[in-house]
Each structure stands twice: as C-alpha cells, then as structure tokens.
Amino acid sequence: MRWNLGLTCAAALSGFVSEASADVYRDPDTGFSFSQKDVAITTNNNHITFRIAIPSPVPANQPYDAVIQIVAPNTAGWVGVAWGGSMTNNPLLIGWTNGANGVVSVRRATAHTAPTAYSGATAQVFKKGVKSNGTHWQVTAKCTGCTSFVTTGSNTKTLNPAGSNRLAFAYSRTKPSQPGSDSSPINVHDLFNYWDHDFAAAGNAQFDDLVKGNL
Ligand code: HEM
Ligand SMILES: *[C@@H]1O[C@H](CO)[C@@H](O)[C@H](O)[C@H]1NC(C)=O
Image (cartoon, rainbow, N blue to C red; front, side, top):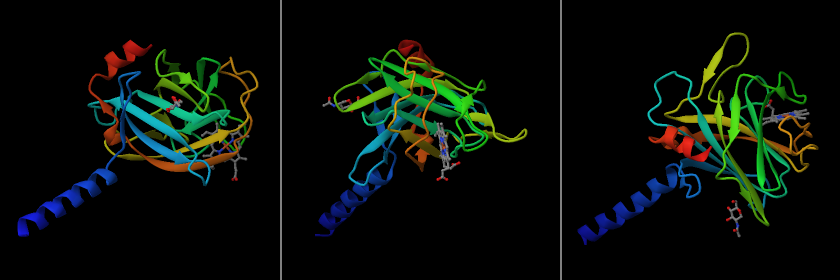
C-alpha cells in the first residue's frame, strides 16, 4: 500500500514536472532542437509557434547566433519578433512567405512608426525548414546580431542563453506589398503581445555544423 502510494506520487510529480518544463521540438527538417512556444493570436486556440535554437555552450556575455523558426497560420501576412521585448530600440526580425520561399528582414524602430533597415544584425533564410501548406507557412533563419544589441545610447543588452528572455511579437494579416523583397514596406500590425522564451532549452551542441547543413 505504502509502496503503491509512493509510485503514484512519483508518477504524478514527474507528470507535473514535464508539463512545467520547457517545450522542446526536435525538427526533422533542419535537425535543430528548438525551444518552442505557442503564442495565442485569437481566443479560439489559433496561435503562432516561435522556435529558437542557440549554440551550446555559449560563453558568458558573448554575442551568439540564434536560429528562429516561425510557424504561422496562412492568415498571417507577416510576423515579427522583437528580440528586446518591445517595438523600439532592438532588432525586429520580420518573416513572411512568398510562394515556396521564405523572406526575413531585420529592422529597427525608435518610435511606434514603420521600422527601417537595421545593419546591426543579419538574417539568412535556410534552405530547409521553409514550407507552406493549405493552413500554415513556416520560415527558418539564422540571425547574427539578434541576441546582443545596443538598446539606447551605448547600452548593450545580451539575452540570457541559460534562462528565460522576455520577447515580443507582432503580426499583420496584410502581406508585405513587395513580398519578394526583404526591404518591402509592411503594414502596421493587427496584434502584438509578449512572452517569455526559455533559452535554457534551446541549446544545440552541433550548432555550427547544423547551420552549415541548412544554408
Ligand atoms: C509599419 C510598421 C509598424 C507600425 C506603423 C507600428 C506602429 C505601432 C504603434 C502605433 C504602436 C502602439 C500601439 C498601441 O499602443 O496600442 C505599436 C506597438 C508595438 N509594436 Fe509596432 N508598428 C510597426 C511594426 C512593428 C514590428 C515589425 C514589430 C515587431 C515585433 C512591432 C512590435 C510592436 C510591439 C511589441 C508594440 C507594443 C508596444 C511596445 O512594445 O513598444 N511593431 N506599433
Ligand atoms: C502544415 O504546415 C504546418 C507548418 O509546417 C505544419 O505544422 C502542419 O502540420 C501542416 N499540416 C498538414 C495537414 O500537413
């Protein structure tokens, strides 16, 4: 009886722990192990999935690359990730689909107006991990400069590779007007929100090799 009770408790505890721990997605297309989060965009369970992969280990306080995979319903014309967790003074990685191709663009804003090109970060779309079907599109890209950046003045923010980082997203139902160009104008978002992304579960020991295999 006592033994049974102990087993029941252990099972209940491990169930609880795995629910509370990070959601890791092993992507068969790109080979990366992503820390992922579904962020709601409607009240009826419609969501955008954000997946992030980083190298492991990451030396303390060093800039490091990140791979981001965005899976969005086809109703999303563009999806943006604000790496510093707000619209202004941080890299805004914007992605959308253009037929069979994915397009990404890193921009920046100093006010709540259309962001402009940002030279402090570069993003490269992967060959793999980019696809669409009747309901969703997804893009996967590597960003250099998205996890460490100047905010205001000479203040630099580096995202914690071993913990949680507050990110923000925005999306518009309207597609960019020149979808084949990464400098296309974009419409203002229909929705923005914030979430905490667990970078501690995003580590990939073979990061550099995986990047090479996907470019
Ligand atoms: C044409 C492009 C854009 C325009 C005109 C625009 C404009 C605005 C405006 C007017 C607000 C204030 C809304 C309010 O307070 O209710 C806002 C907030 C916000 N926008 Fe944008 N935006 C644009 C693109 C983007 C992009 C690409 C992102 C990327 C994630 C973004 C992220 C946010 C966020 C997170 C907020 C919440 C307030 C904050 O964190 O600063 N925006 N935007
Ligand atoms: C459609 O594509 C999305 C994104 O790649 C994927 O998550 C989903 O499972 C696909 N749906 C079907 C029916 O194949």
